[in-house]
Image 1: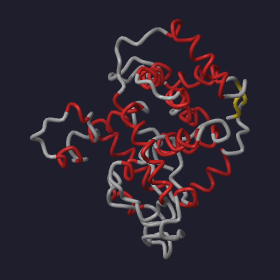
Image 2: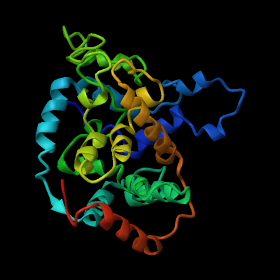
Image 3: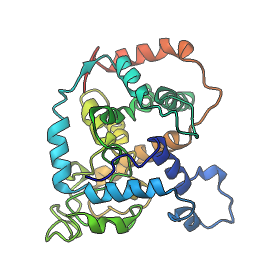
Image 4: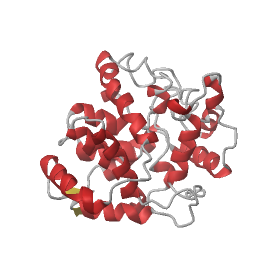
Length: 287
């Protein structure tokens, strides 16, 4: 298989999202919205290579295989705090854009949610939403951990970033998978749809017995940009999905735009988050 680490760090993908979908509060009124979806403008070659690999290999069979492999949760068992230490190993000293570890990124998101007075389970979602990135430490390539998520088993939408790269995917010309609905029925509901494999799906399954449904939607679909930003898959969603996506859209700005350089220290925040985790989660989690 080809080069599996085109990005300097996982944060490079998230920086690319910020270019595609800037903070609405910073968008000049006179600038056309379409200008913010120019994927070719100032895009690093590493990001394009990342999407080329992602779109080439994220097929229906690939997703099923990865679920069978990782959703057994038999790699490790540890307290969530050990998992955060584990996650911090992903920090890349060669990345010039950030010197924050993964824990600080998560705390910025969760603290912004808490400061706005949202329910404590949503604060916990902010803290854990990227925990699935530990997949990289189990040998998964970047393109199988991060990236915009999308349905597999049906036609790939042209609203997905770099749709031309899907031409190398084995499902692109498949007799069934290349059709609009593919293996699905119209408006069957996302609970019946397979999405591309990555940290979103992984952490959703890890947490599905511990959080309210609204929080689970946030976890599972926070990278599903072609839907919650482009409405590309309305034909697969049911009424319940549309209602729940109000929560996904509420969460998304906190994920993308919560960058507070004056973040409180972990020592100050620790008592609150220790109690929050104890309220919702078991002492150890299986990975």
